[in-house]
Image (cartoon, rainbow, N blue to C red; front, side, top):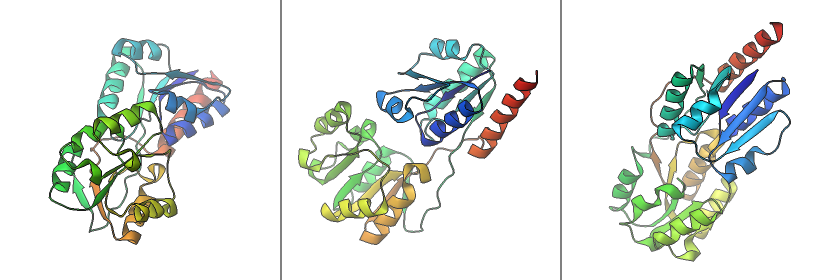
Amino acid sequence: MRIVIFSGTTEGRELSRLLAGRGAEIIVSVATEYGSEEQGSVPGIRTHIGPLTAEEKQELLQGAALCVDATHPYATHVTASIRKACEQASCDYRRLLRVESSLDEGAVVVSSAAQAAAYLARTEGNVLLTTGAKELGNYAALPPERLYPRVLPSHESLRACEALGVPHRNILAMQGPFSQELNEALMRQYDIRWLVTKDGGAPGGFPEKAAAAAATGASLLVIHRPAETGESFEQVLACCEALIDKHGQT
């Protein structure tokens, strides 16, 4: 029995390993080499690396008993394409939702990176950007010396920072998630007054970032998570295990 997991997240990796341990044939789809590196090599798991066209998604899903969408909670366009591919391939679909974080009353909440940039334009002080390299272009109107992007240590990330004109001394090329202590150290080192983040939940290190902002007196600016429906990790795992058990009895 085959289960396809669209992953690249902590919970996607954990789910794939648990199900492979139960004897299921698992195919994990990740968009980047970084995602593959994090996934690692596990018996019973085959990893597909790179973005897929609509037709390629359908082909991957052919004959699968179930598809689990464990992609990032902000990757709404990816989720929409996976849902459509499942419908066209007549494959059962489950959306694994990451638990949302509770926000302090003092947090500033906006709906997009563009709104975050517009808000920051009315403020002063250094900004720690922790929302990834792909959205850096939204902050082009801000003085680049204010910006401290924390991005993955990849050529693509560095090029995105350079295209924005960020001074090299401001680029923090690191792989997370990070502890509260490390967040605090970086924020004090670079005199950060604003921390921009998405609600990546506990797997994305959100609590540690929020606590570090509070401890250093910095303001927290959160890009609001898009609303969607789905199931918890425990619910999806139970569904998959029941399917594996049923398959083993037939």
